Length: 271
Image (tube, rainbow, N blue to C red; front, top):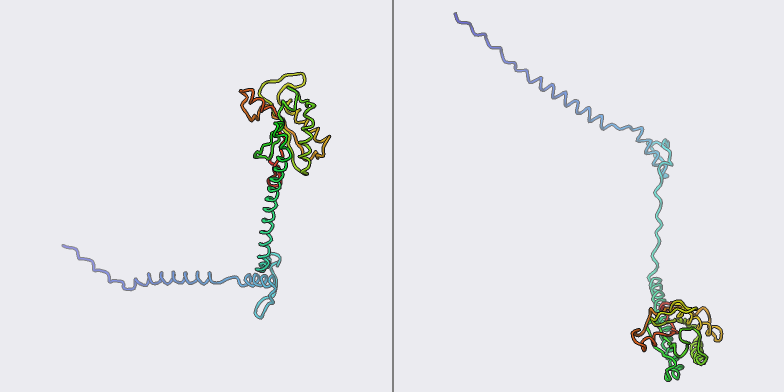
């Protein structure tokens, strides 16, 4: 005998209430959270506001708290900025003009020194012209100034720094011409050829060249009106030749003492 089919249960048409209740619950929770987030601690806000008002010197008004619950030293006032006015246009123009004038004066002063030195060289050349004609001295211009060249065979004993007696009047003429120009920087430089020297007094050409320059300097300072401040000496030995040392004529030119009248550039002599 076949079983009877169990009758179906009637549909529950109120199940939607479960979902609706869950939705309402969640929505309530959201609003509670939003409300909680929107509520601030008014007491702390009043404390901070009162502290700012005190720091900036603002008097408390109606409905506000005047108590200074936070130390005012923790909040520093913004320092005022001092605005320095720009100098007037006329003053700037005057300052620029003064700067230009100073630069121009410096340039004119430098040009004046250069012009004076040119005149000085001409004067020396004219003064020593008689000695140049007979070959007792050579006067040449160089990048450092004016060179008065004394060759060994006229002024010194061979291999010695001793001056020949007959050369002393010539040195006097040279010293007189140079001393007349006043405050002029002078450098006396001794030179030799490249032949080795070894005597009881001089072991190297350096020693000989320096001793010759020293003797010329002593004559200038002892017998003529020169200031030690304006004179310097140097000994270069065979290391600054003006001619080839391969020939006797070249070696003769290299054995010399140069008296250099130094040209001044930028308030300093050209060494």
